[in-house]
Image (cartoon, rainbow, N blue to C red; front, side, top):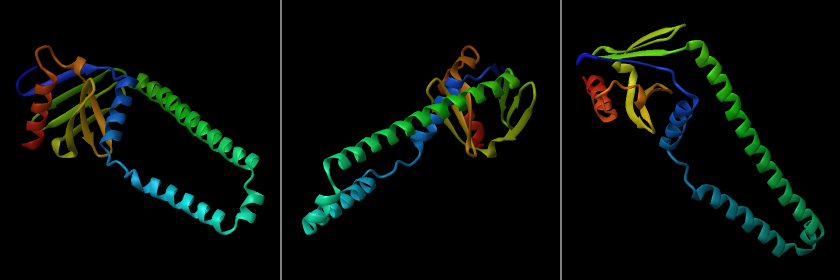
Length: 176
């Protein structure tokens, strides 16, 4: 490693990639909580108004078994959504790991002109103008490139280079 460049070699893991995706998700602008609550309050108010204005009609259609079936259906639906989400994460992880096995070891280099990534099947060179942000991730550093994030694990850094110093140097090169 010279002052002009930083060279690394590592094999990314699914855990690092998933942590990077989660970090990006947390950075996204959070949705306002009051909107769904206001919608739910509106629905409850309309149902309450309907029960107050037409109690006979609602009493005929809204019985205890109907209410129980409705609540049970909501729980079943939520269970299916949770199961489907977990299945998709497992499926994505398996596909990611199969793809990573084809790529092999990543050899990354960083310098004043930009960065390069070399694997067994590809090579990428890019300037710093494509990197929109250098960010700290749990256990590593992320380079935000468009909608993708390149992760560099802290364990891959050369001896004597702290993650903070690494990010500072990348930011200096990006800002130049």
